Image (cartoon, rainbow, N blue to C red; front, top):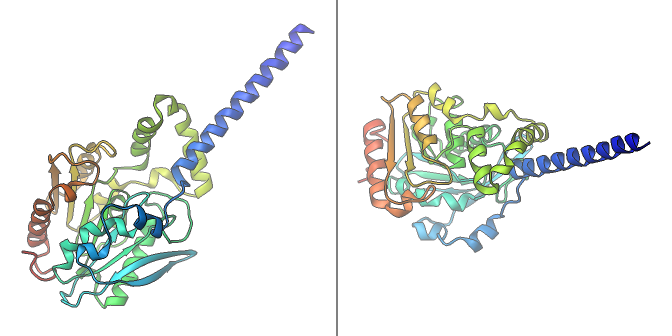
Length: 313
């Protein structure tokens, strides 16, 4: 009887442990694909970077872009300078279209029209799981096609600029849109597993490691995506589009080793890698020294896309 009781107790303990493991795994899968995000209004209320008027931009047109069941909400800025160019701006994880406008002046003064939109599951766009570029790259292509139709510009006169999550997305768009003018990718991750393994430990400590594999499995099942296919590093190997890649040495959120790995797989004949040592945190090099950042972007455009827009000098 005692032996049977012992086995029952052990069975109960095992069931409790399995239940706790599955609960923790589900929690971490939620952190991966289903975190609550700020609305555009909440982001505007909390930001210390201002909004479009602070970057010398006019009031935008509020636009909606459909990609299947997803509706992307965005801002379209029509540039009266008419530089015959356009740039699609993609924000970082947890942000909104407002959080990428620090890049707008780089291209606005060249006479470019601009389109910035909230990624799926962010801001005012459709609620959806976050797949780190797996589905977002398709959204980006839909936004690019909408932008081209709106402006009458060919893809060859439109550039893609993204920061962090947005940078990883534009790199993954490259195999789908091999005719754009250029890509600017600021502080991307090289692939999903690498950044999740880094961030999970940074945020929750080393005890989280046993839960990461099961969290990935649950996330893939819930969001219907392939985590291994989320790979900006693969995107850059399949393109002839000029790429301006930049990262801060002091970035602790997404270590610089991510961009170093991406650059190592790129075509050096069409890729510029600006590795900053300006004391900037994640994706903040453009804020720490805008003038030097602009100088590097201007030189990149003059070298690889000399006819893009008006003079950036």
